[in-house]
Image 1 (tube, rainbow, N blue to C red):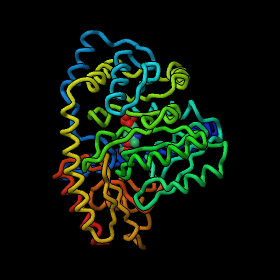
Image 2 (cartoon, rainbow, N blue to C red; image 1 turned 60 degrees about the vertical axis):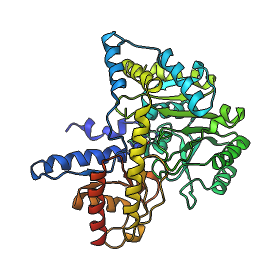
Image 3 (cartoon, rainbow, N blue to C red; image 1 turned 90 degrees about the vertical axis):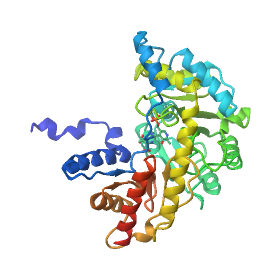
Image 4 (cartoon, rainbow, N blue to C red; image 1 turned 180 degrees about the horizontal axis):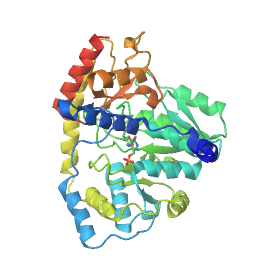
Length: 405
Ligand code: PMP
Ligand code: GLU
């Protein structure tokens, strides 16, 4: 080793050195390694780790991508996306969310994750605060850190939703330093869905204190028990001006690998975001944009088929989790995650969610994400985007594991 490679860290940016590895992707990598080892034993890891639909992308969408390639729609496009797709997105926002936007309000990026990163980079100066309700999806806080901002978690109430008093307290304590609040309903990791009234109360606090809102609605189509999704930007002109609504085709149309996400906001904000895209990623994959256009404007039957299948799985997994001694689980009403509290099972053998998830994977080949990755060490996250048979096998293994602790 040369002297230089020994000192490599001193050459790297503090931003990147301070960044945590994504726990969802790290777990997937570990499950892949175990599966390689298990190949000859006929066993495999039951994957409740990374959250992505187990369904295939519907064929009309795949066909649209193939057609785009055949028609040589394979070149650069405007960095923020093709006009046709932007128009379809404005129609979607009007039809599904009751929000009126023009194409100057739309930004298309490489998945909701990259869109969120661009938003955060557009708003956050070094030291600026971004409020993130706990428990939170793994990447929010890390993206803020990458922009040298300061993520602050808002405590949750009994329903695992924002504690409004804590929100008010944090705003008061940090007057003038808060740029953004990130909302996510239906929620990853809890499966909680915010009611109109709950969103109105949060909106009121943000309006009063000039805090911009990122509303991450990527799971909007996966809600159960007849509950309705509400977009905070649809409530009033003032809230629309203050909100950046983020969505993607990734979850709704089982298109996680196609990498198309989007956001709608004031055109002045979109203009600034476009500068980042021009100078960094450029446009999202061109054929994937045409496929996303078909996803949003073509036949929607597949969405309801997937939704109702997730609902059956939710019912099953909730019943199984609730019957395991030592596990306490809130009833998830949306997305495809359960977020049970496992802290009653902690002791000498297992002291935290990380050790719980690690032992569970090692002993029973069931992959779950430790709650600590979402800002709370008393929980684990289980993604039930898997067949009922796999969920049943996974729950059998989890139940046995807990009994033997
Ligand atoms: N927001 C939430 C809450 C998510 O769970 C995900 C899933 N990765 C994303 C954003 C990012 O989605 P995409 O795959 O479109 O980047
Ligand atoms: N949203 C998924 C999850 O939470 C995908 C992984 C990721 O983007 O981090 O597992």
